[in-house]
Length: 289
Image 1: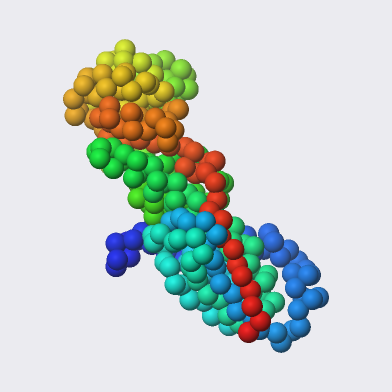
Image 2 (image 1 turned 90 degrees about the vertical axis):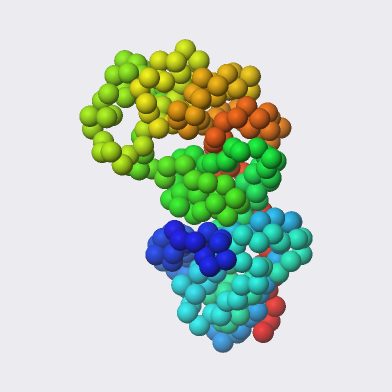
């Protein structure tokens, strides 16, 4: 993942091409698009516009457009509202032109991608704006659609959020089940330190202020404050006193997120940003070329 010249997040094609190819193969199977190949003349051409049926933050448009060019390199695509921009209802996001059969064959794959990612980006944008006068950052979790994690986490960034760990291999997060098996916070942290290198950050989940007090002398990098009320979060932040990153998680909604942010935590993690957010309504309107 890189940053575009304009400061917007950007995905390298290497990251998403295999995913898009897999989605096309899932849809086209071994026989191709039986409907379009039967109904549409072989030499027919068409133009199409991606149109926002609801206002929102655009994300994944370049990924979606790659479905057309992967299916037929002669299809021409043009972006009119790039990722990271806010589109009003009725706005044209992109144009596609060329052979009609592959244009129609790639339609659903492209829409599935851009609608899903734009929905995530829009929800992230709105929740980031809701706490804009507090220092907390909005972050995602590993509760992503299997196979789409890189894309969904990208959409969170497009919406103005930041990414939590991408997988089990890039950071340590000791959760309640780990603690139950390990026999407590201190032995769990000790075992991690004996196993991982100095570049790997360690975060521990706690449910109570008593657990937090036990964790503080161990000097880990971050604490996940799970399912705590805003008042308890406030007390936890005072106890930590800047010695580690504080992350609030669990039961956080658009209705209570400002109360959570006001408690003074550094991060607010929201699983629903990627596991249950509503897709943005975007249509592909086709014309005869």
